[in-house]
Amino acid sequence: TQVRERIEDIFLGMGYQIAEGPELEDDWHNFEALNMPADHPARDMQDTFYLAEPLMPASYDPPTRGLAPRGPQPLTLLRTHTSAMQIRYMEQHDPPVRLVAIGPVYRRDNLDLTHTPMFHQCEGLVVGKGITLAHLKGTLLAMAEALFGAGTAVRFRPSFFPYTEPSAEVDVA
Image 1 (cartoon, rainbow, N blue to C red):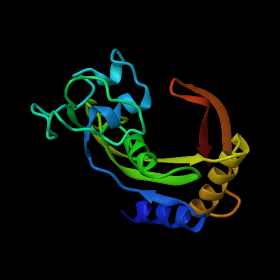
Image 2: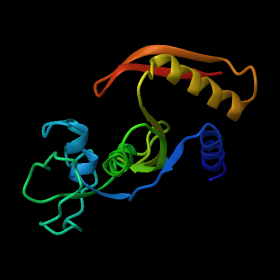
Image 3: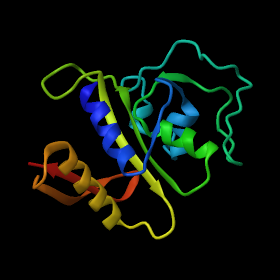
Image 4: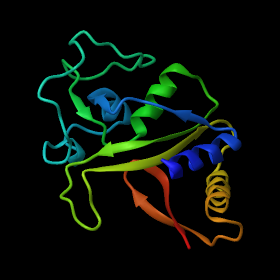
C-alpha cells in the first residue's frame, strides 16, 4: 500500500490521472477492446480465472465509441491486467490522455519463487499529439529517481511484447 501510494503521488505530481476499475471484469474490457484474438493463450481457462456465471446481463452494452463487442454475452473474470482500466477511461474521455492504472491482477499461475496467482501491476497510458518514445523514457527515469533517489541507474532496452509497438523493458539498479 505504501509503495502504491508513493507511485500514485509521483505520477499525480507529473500531471497524470489515476485510473480506477473493477477487479471483476468483462471479456470486452479485458480482451476484446484490446484486440486480443479469441485464440490468445491468456483467454484459456488454464490461464484466466473465469466466473461460472456472468455478473452482467446479456443485454450489457458498454460505451465503446462505435466498436461493437463481439460475442453473445460478456464473460466475467478476474482481470488479468490493468489495461481494462485504460479502456474504461478512454470510453469516457477524449485525448489527450495521461493516466496510470495500478492494482491487483489475477492469473492462474502456480505459486513459486517467481509466480503468484495475484500480483499488482502499474501501467501508464499517454495519448496526445507529438508524444514520442523519448517522453516515455523521460517519464520512467523521473519516476525511478523519485521512487529510488537521484542518480538511480536506469537501463532502457528494446524488447518484444506482442501488443505494444515499440516495446521496451526498464531495469533499475
